[in-house]
Length: 145
Image (cartoon, one colour):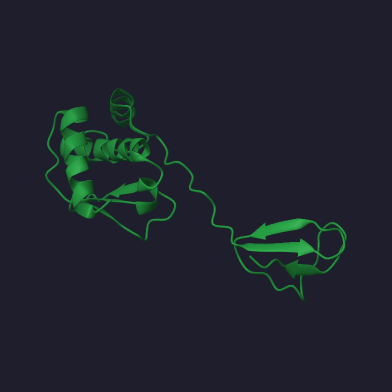
């Protein structure tokens, strides 16, 4: 999905779910890693995690609704924060996502023990001369993938 497609989707969801237009920018931000999206109070633009678009259109629409709740409530000078009752009510009315779904982990380093054959998957590379198997203290070998 491109930024232009995202912009039109956000505008469409805003009109359908809220009955109000979205007249600012929406785009993907590759630096977002743990959150689904972010609404900026100063210039009112919204940026989204591109990895959330890979999880499906329904997930992305739920995140868009969440950020649009912040957007519309802030512009109306109402409670736009997560803790505010107005935000919680609007999020429930529009069926938006309360939390962003967790992304699949990017574990890419696979090791096995030379003695007991235990398998280990790690997100970061480990020094096999320094670390040993936690079960039997055997030597760790990096699997070739």
